[in-house]
Image (cartoon, rainbow, N blue to C red; front, side):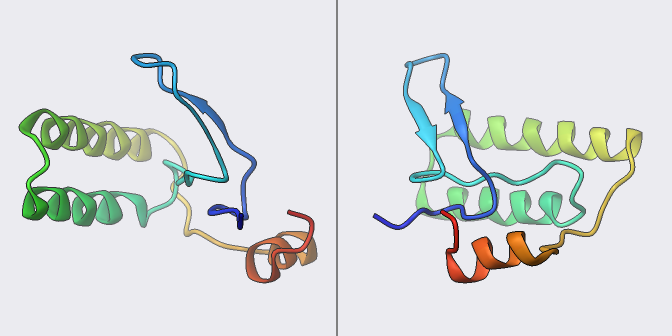
Length: 96
């Protein structure tokens, strides 16, 4: 199966249910990237459109607030894919 996220190696655990996620079935967005807040707003809007429950919408809204606060406290960054290794992984799937 092709990896969803080629840029990062991911190991995440949902503490509520114990489910484990990797780059095979998830993706990682860095909170410092200036594109993340607009992306999360688009995600929230789509969740509302398709009928996600109110708790999920509230959770995403709170996430947006935390990311915006974080970005005000650190150096925000324009997202990039740079360097031969990262470009090879992200664009061509090399080394994944």
